[in-house]
Image (tube, rainbow, N blue to C red):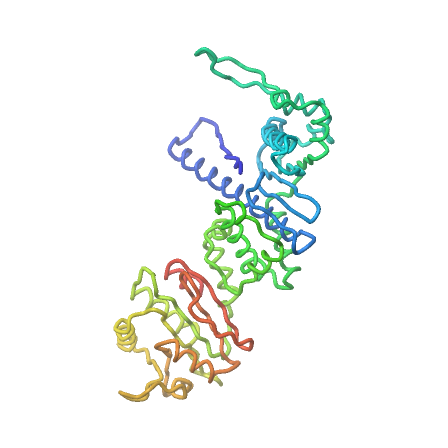
Length: 433
């Protein structure tokens, strides 16, 4: 994978060298990230456009991606030069790499491939006349000069790549028949929007679900495939791809977060699931994963108080309600301390125990709050209590699970809404809800 690092130069007058340095690094980093995303997105797009479910794609194969159908294999190198004018030298080296592979095919060391070079450039596409002629291929792409040290003296040395590979005109004509060049690839945002639409069409879903569920999962899957050292493990069929991204959870995907931005990511989740101005009666269950978190009682209490403010409606309500809380992985003694703190703060709670020594009673925890008995929060001390309560609640229930590394609860009732959102820091939850 070749990533363009864009350097921004300003007039020297009134420049702050330190500020310029960090601004340049930031812009370069942004363009590097966009370069990675562009190739990942093209890979996702290519998988979605495969005709047959058994057609496959290899991430980082001979080229950036290799597409294999029942009849042929195509090696594709993908470039994104957002602010660069096209020149022959930009694609000359990739074409020589492709010719190196073609030589191995001719010698019987590799199976035959089609080659495709696609790229996005700001300007200059008209410099390349297609289809390539034999003379153009030789002069502009296979012949080059490089400075080399000979007898401790730097000298410019002319290379003719095809001659060094011992390929004749007949061989080069054959190579040209296998080579496709596209300098008018889709712009970054255009390609992204196309993928979101393809996913909407494939899964018959909304734009939010397409982007936050399916695209997010696809991005993570392609990233993980690209890290596999064994090429066999970087191969995936369209059918497997669709099955693996058909995920009912929002992953905390650092790559997705980089391109969306943390504030926008959290704001969109909040708008989709927690943004209603007039909160209607529902039995809402908030499940928070306390395992492996940098735990802070103060942060957790802030989250619980926010849940109370938004989802406890008692006064002047025909159907008063308050939320249920399950804290997964929390120490029992710490749970007791949190309950004490809330009670000291004037928060009335219910945990389904009628008296000391009693067993958990789902009927007790289901009692609605009212103007005289203003229960603001209902605690479920363990998963067994959670399941028992949900069975009694029925279709009025909604489950919002915030998990750290892996999902810890599945109710699997098609009549009950289940939202599963991954977070990285406990404080993320407050920014989402």
